[in-house]
Image (cartoon, rainbow, N blue to C red; front, side, top):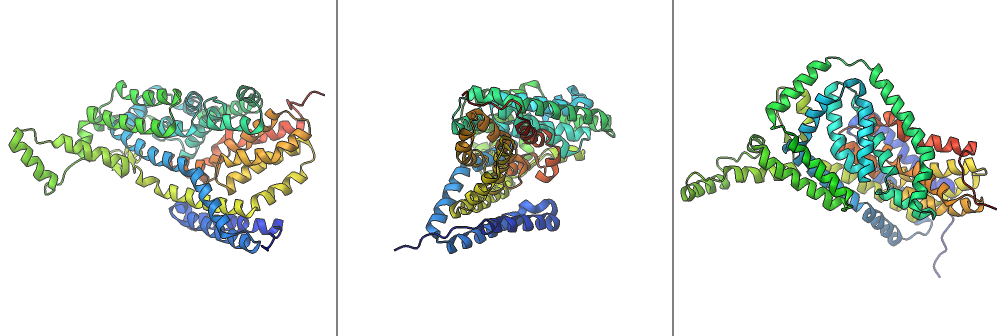
Length: 499
């Protein structure tokens, strides 16, 4: 007869999480901004080892643990592939002049005082139209970050404005996957869900906009005109700049609006960027794609020249090398302007590998915790303490945040709490849209605030700004859960079943 599983205690379930909190904090103190270089990944794996050891002592088999880990990694695989493609897209959009052009025209159009407001609004509108905060941040967001840095704003503040807008648009867009997922889990329809979300979401974004607007007028920027002039001149020197380059993001946004899946959409955006680079940025292509005189290619060029006269294929080979390098490796556009040198450097897919490693490690930890039943044990203890409607909503939001921290996946933070709390909401006579809204208020927008969550790790890497650096400035993402909890305790706009 097989042994029956021992019941997990709450303390046993919390041990891996306590280990994680202590040593991730230690990593910040010891490694500073370089925690994603490997130290956080190792701590996540060690925490998984501790969780697995406790699970095995409670008669959970290794095969069950391994199966759950593989399942968790498979769920995160699309995010990791998207991340790699974003690395390639950043490279080709740089050498094509697309990102430089967006920064160039942005610096000419946007007044410094309203830049933060503009960053929130533009990011929000693009994300609302596309349904993707990831694509918005990787494209428009990168350009806005460059503009903000050139103006002299703190990078954490700029990133906070971009993320606030992008996650507002993502949350409210009928094209967003999480916006469709939450009502499906809770048992309501999409547009009822979206309309009901406006109760907590619109006041939150309005408050965030007010804060960013006030900061834009209050913050004193130094050497603004000098910085703007210097960046514009450097861009004009390094790239061919024309409004035609803005067709690249327009094409990508149009593709996404047509509901093309993210992976093929990003690949198309990458290829279009490479094509525009070859057509419009000849000097950049020749600089990046320079061929070693002693290489086999150089000898082949001599052969081509002997056959076809002057058609030695220099630009053809340079284009291939530059395009491939932009997709997978380091590209640095050199100029005399330090700001431009910092802005115009990408590392392609290779630069995303540490983040992929982090996501893999987080999925191993989350999968182990789920296999052991530790996450369910902890959240069941929370449910028992939720007596009032306000405390139930607060518990749901807290549980979603908890899953964002432990399972490291935005979708799990919606699906698992949704399944766990559905019966409690129904027993208390609450409409399903109350649950669906609460899942988004707690799960969707807090994922980006966790450094090892798929969302937090991705946006940190894409923007080149540490999660801890931008977190205090993500006003919308911080205010929205608090707004939802406050309205829950006040009983404001809480829909109940008739009778």
